Image (tube, rainbow, N blue to C red; front, top):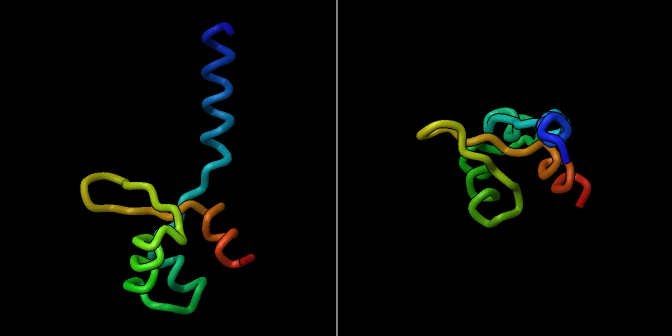
Amino acid sequence: MPLSESIAEVHKELDQIRLVSKANVARTLDCSVQHVSHLIDKGELQAVPIGPKGIRVTLKSLQRFIAA
């Protein structure tokens, strides 16, 4: 596969990944940020580290959690 196609595939995948702050997840679920952290620790929400201290939740995992 040519490099340009590989890069295009990576960009397509990255376009589909949306990240949400813990504060926004808490507002969406009407709960505390601490509870969101607990859900992340339990593996019920998928989180991605952003920098040395930041964490974002994937929108897809939040949607799955709400739908369950």
